[in-house]
Structures are given as structure tokens and as C-alpha cells.
Image (cartoon, rainbow, N blue to C red):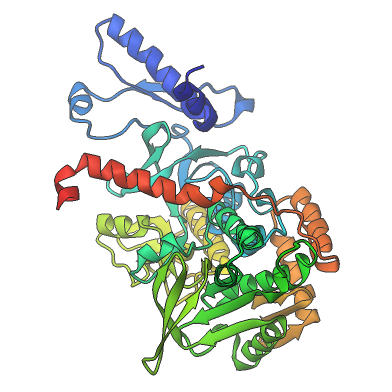
Amino acid sequence: MAPTAFLRRCFFPAGLRALRRSHARHVRARTATGGAVGSRTGWVLDARAGQPARTVEGPTEEERMSHAHPPRLDGPGPGHHHVVVIGSGFGGLFATRELARVPGVAVTVVAATGHHLFQPLLYQVATGILSEGEVAPATRDVLRRQRNARVLLGTVTDVDVERRAVTATSPSGEYEVPYDSLVVAAGAGQSYFGNDHFARYAPGMKSIDDALELRGRIFGAFELAELSDDPEEIERLLTFVVVGAGPTGVEMAGQIAELAHRALRGNFRRIDPRTSRIVLVDASPEMLGSFGQDLSRAAQDQLGRLGVEVRLGEMVTAVDADGLELRARDGSTRRIDSRCKVWAAGVAASPLGARLAERAGAETDRAGRVKVEADCTLPGHPEVFVIGDMMALDDLPGVAQVAMQSGVHAVRQIARRLRGETGRERFVFHDKGSMATVSRFHAIALVGGREVAGFAAWVLWLGVHVFYLIGFKNRVTTLLHWAVSFIGRGRSERTATLQQVRARQALAAQEERARAAAHPAAADA
């Protein structure tokens, strides 16, 4: 089998391969009869009803010649309200599940990945506690029993609000999906506050790829230190800097400290991992600011007991392969030499938000979130809901709770309209509390206005995260891994490869070369 054919078979979804085969057969048939070329293949809404996929007339000759629109994957057909959900995160998944209860609705989930990511536990993948499968179950498997839902692999790049269609790209090309109602839950990525070049040496932590790269960098630093004879190089390798003192940064710093001071003890012969230096940096004068001063102080004290050096009020001004530069509020600067840096500061909405706002004449905030109406709809387009990290409404934070609740709210508004009810219901966020784990047996929690710190908060954190994990098997295996890591001191998911570390930069370089080849004049300039 040729390499290109092998890659297509590995990475192209079966549904899209079937679409391409169907398209090829239709082209041959229409060409043989002298007809116009083109085919749009539909999908089976309910296999139990025995309804075959519909074949609809393709584009006109003028459309085909002008390449006005990509090939269209049709909806379920007349009699069903077609809801397209963009994204398979908390917002998208909760909206899709809620749609199972709405009669007469068919759902298409378009997502850039084939999995639902439980992002709050991503740092545990990076530090060898959990495997990626435990925090990222396959979306198709999660929705396998929901007969009114289908899943398509693709990154949505455009939304035509006038034609009510979304355009997505996949490894097999571009396609289009029409909608009657649209739920935009594309989520957010890492923000470097205008310094995107920092990402080359300080990866963020927003995806499985990020977590696996960081796992390789963290464990690889210890391996390289074991090989080195240079004391300065060993010190650089055993210095870990986490930028951002929010929940993610605090949890990451705490776990690296436990890894170095406890889990890896006795694993090496030439170095002592307990001599590692872990630094947590933030430009804000206070860590975990949303938790209040008392809980923030409790978390900082616990990090101190773990040996984490907390540096607040210091801004990162430069990052390179060997370290980073900091500037304090008084203007003084310092450098920390470190080979392993983790960026956990700031988020930015998906670029789709800016494109959607441009299409609809809406506004975005500084983080790229779309300013929506009180019911989470796009201004001027009540059929489009923007939820979770994508929406700017009432200064709500970009957390999982907001995504889940806004997803459910959007579906309830769709159901009300289908029942013929008029009027719009304002989205009201019910804050169920916030929590962050600092180390094993120690967390902080703010629930119902009550502040809890220590072991009790850790048990509460444990229960909440197990409850929201998708799938019984994932819950069981996660509990087993936690027992190994927290009661014992092992890390069962330490496997890392060089490819995981280098793949992101290699892909970025490949994309840069492709852009340069496509626009040689701009590259020369």
C-alpha cells in the first residue's frame, strides 16, 4: 500500500471516505451520461427506521466552475430541525446530550478532534498520573447511544449566517454543513498576550498534544540531567518554571514538586531529583485571586512546604531555549535559567469567534470572545447560540461550569421555539463553587460562600472530578491511578517519546515553509 493511501486510511474518517467514494461513483456516472458533475450525500437519521441516505442534486455548472462553496454534507431532511454543534468540549457535549430530549431534532457535532477533553485534569497527564485516554474519551463512543446525533471530524473555519451553513476542513478536504440552529462551542486556546513566539519554548496546556509534549519535556529534563557532567547544565535542566498562578499553574507547579521530591526519589544514580527548583511566576500580586486572600495564602503556604518558589508581581518579558527574563513592578529585571518552561497564563477564544463576529456584524472583547445577547444568541441571529469560552456576557469566567450551563440553556431555548413559545429567557449562571488542588491530600475550595482548605477540600475536589468524568471505566481507572500516585508514590504514565516533544515545532516549521512557498514575495520581504 502506498504511503499516501495508508495515511488516508489511518486518518480520514470512515464517513468521509464513504462520501468521497460516493462522490467518485456519481462523477463517473454523470460524466458517462454527459450530465453535470456533482453529488451531495446525506445521512441516515435513524437506522431503525430504515431510511436510506439521500442523494441530492449537486451544484450547477456555474457553481462548480466558480468554486463558490465546498461540497455539502446534507442534514437529515424535511421534518427534522437540524442543530449543528461546533466543538466537543464541555459546552458542546452538554448541549448535544440535552438535545437527546428534544423531539424532532437531529444533531451534527463538528469537532476538530475525535475526543471530548476533560481539561481540568490535563496537568495530571503531563505529570504522569493519568493516561490521555482517561481524560479524553472518544466523542463517538460517548454519544453512541444517542440516535439523533452524528459526529464529524473537522475544524470549522467559517459560518455563513445568511445561508445558514458552516464550513469545516478535515484531512480529506473542505466540506459544508447546513443548519437550522447553531451552537458555537469551539472553546479557547492559550494566550501569550501578543508574544506568540514564547510558545516555541514554553508550551501551553490546552490539548492532549500539549500535555504529552510537556510530559516529554518534564521527564526528559531529568533524563538529560542524569547524562550531563556540567553542573550549570544540570541546574538548568532541574529548574522548572510555571508561568501563571491561576488554578492550572498552581496545580502544575505542585505536581512537578511532588514528582521531583517524592515520586522520582531513588530512580536516578548521578542526580538527586529532590534538588530540583520549581518556580511559579505571575505578573499579578496575588495567586488564585478569585479564591480570596485567605485561600490564596493557604495555597501559597502549602506550595512553600513543597519547596515551590512563588514569584508574584513579575512579568515575563522574554523566553528562549535556556531560560526566561522577568521584570518586577519596580522595573528591576532578573533571569531564570531553565530548560523546561510551562505557560499557564491567559486564554484566548477560538479564532472562529472573530470570524463569526465579522460575518454577523457583532463585536468581540479583548480575548476574542463574541459579545452576545442576554440569552446567549448572536445579535441579529436568534438561531445562533455562542456559549462557554466563546461568549462575552456579564463578565462570566471561562470555566467549565459556564460552558455546561450555557450549553443546556441554549438547547432549552431551541426546544421552546420548536414548541411555539415566544420571548427570550436570559441566561443566569449558577455558581456552584471553585476548587483547586495544590498537592496530594491538600486542596482549596470555595463553595456556597464557604472557604475550605486542606484534606476536606481535597476529598471534595476528588469527588467532583470523578463525578464529571465521562464513562464508568474512566472513573474506575482514574481512581486506581490516583491510589497509586497519592497513597503510594508511583507514576504509572511516564512514557514519553522524542516525537511528542518535537512534533509541534516540526509541524509549525512545515506550515511556515508552505506559507513561504505559497507567497514567495512576502517571504523575501
